[in-house]
Amino acid sequence: MSGAAPAKTYKGYRVEALVFLGTALFFGIICLVYWFTSYEHAGAVMLLLTVFLGFIPGSYLFWWGWSKGGNMPPRPEDSDDAELVDGAGTVGAFPSSSIWPFCMGISAAVICLALVFGAWLGVLGGAGVVATLIGYTMESRRGGYV
Image (cartoon, rainbow, N blue to C red; front, side):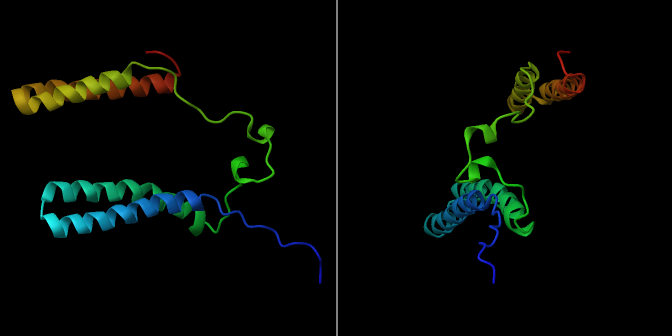
């Protein structure tokens, strides 16, 4: 019998998954209590949507942590003996500053104003959304400003 300790299996994202799923469970219980004590539809629907705000990322992280058999590569921040150098380097690719998200927000606001002022404004806002999506896609493909 060997005296070596068994290799630790990496349990990536399990804590994060439990936090999100626990939040979903908490708001699910609150939603049921609210529904059966108030019989008010709008609040119950909002609480149900809050359940999904915890369930969707929690189930995704659960899938990566458990159903993949814990075969994810370990992150430096999960190791007890990690040093600052272990996390150095490129973290990810982030988009540069762009005007297109602002334009998308303006176009969405114009579409919302169509509920008040008429469908013609919705057509104008829809055209703005399409133009914004095309511009943002072109900018991200070229890697610079359009």
